[in-house]
Length: 113
Length: 112
Image (cartoon, rainbow over all chains, first blue to last red; front, side):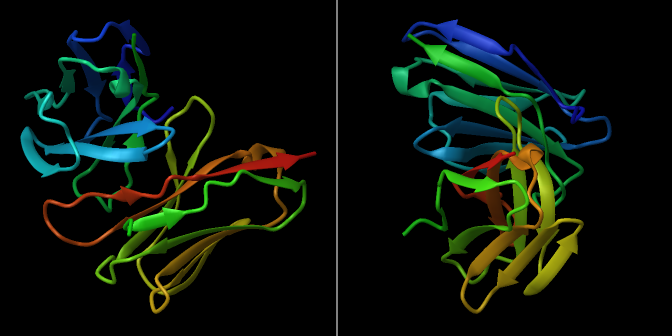
């Protein structure tokens, strides 16, 4: 158990809908990272927050947004969902910078029908 | 050219074999090199971490970095069925606003 929790584990929804994925980092970790994993693209970095502020941005679509709250938990919002958004979404946390060990949560499997 | 290239496999070996997993990268500015292991239906976990050229050993695992060739390797000695997983290389350059870049992963199967 990495200490990072993600909810829900599975999510099935329809195209055009909006969903929210939640992540609680390990105790003491200030950075939260969101990744998308698909068979064709592999593990793709989406966005990083550090102590409530956006720190780095990857290939995150404009339909996607995230935030980190004062208690350091984070939410990833996915809107206007498309079939291609079906993937595993991982949250990871670390003490601070990307070279610090990132601890990954169990992931949320999103299926868009 | 992708920043990190990794042969997806799959790679199947018998128990006890030496396994070699490899990645190449394109940007010489990359400084930190990691290997993550991901079991089926789980999140990745850090296996090895190095930031210099040369070898780093941890038990049955050896990470090797050749910065002149932009080539990183992970060797697994005396492979076990419990090593069956997907192995992802990850690299980072020490620059604010950047993040880890992962290879697509190599799926390894060790048969007993």
